Image (cartoon, rainbow, N blue to C red; front, side):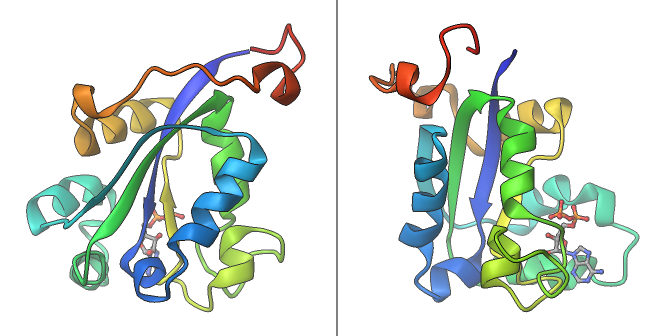
Length: 155
Ligand code: ADP
């Protein structure tokens, strides 16, 4: 099983609603390992790249504006199959339709203001971690909890 890294952004809605600690705590409690963590103000350049797949959508500029409304918190999380685990925790895009128990299902009433961004596959995760973190901002540190988090042949 693959130890993966994935990118999470706590969106401006999360920062404004004072949910930073609560959402980070969900990832920590799950057993994901935080290897990068910082606050940053996004700009149109990085968002046009990050949301390039939405460039033809009518809401493209609105989504970018919402992501620039205030700083975001960027996290790089590590774990076995972390990309899929984090997407499952986040839930489907529309907060009103996301199942209870997911982050979006529990905290969001909106298609757009949906609390977190999470990488959706191995290629995007690699590109997104690189987009938001410099190599020296990522920390290789060993968890003392590994054998309580996984069986010894799982990681
Ligand atoms: P996800 O964040 O679930 O991977 P997408 O990559 O499709 O979803 O979209 C990126 C972000 O753009 C979403 O998280 C959401 O904030 C916004 N968005 C996507 N689709 C819509 C929509 N139909 N209406 C409003 N906002 C949307």
